[in-house]
Image: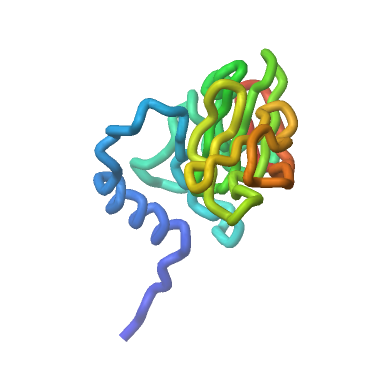
Length: 162
């Protein structure tokens, strides 16, 4: 009996295809909480092109020049606001036009995930801590420490975690 090993890319693509229909109902609370779709880990995959119906369209590249999947498009981050990426545990803000910042989405008070960006602050739902979108500093406690900065790369319209 012979067996053929299935590579990791095939398994991940198949899993993504199976779970595509198992999302939320899209009935958010009107905030700016967002999660980006997960891209398969291709670090251990062979360097042959994937042959799948799940291939990206030209408008949405699956990787950037650094090889990392894009986190967001710059046009998706509102000026004076931001977007929370819960899966990546990061929040990306745009305090002023063309200036992008990224911070950990883990509240420094008790480790809850922040859930929205509104009125110039990054807000935690657990105990009401708020952080400034420009530098992650505490705007309202009980948190006493700022959100740690995260490194991002802005290249053209793509924002990627560094």
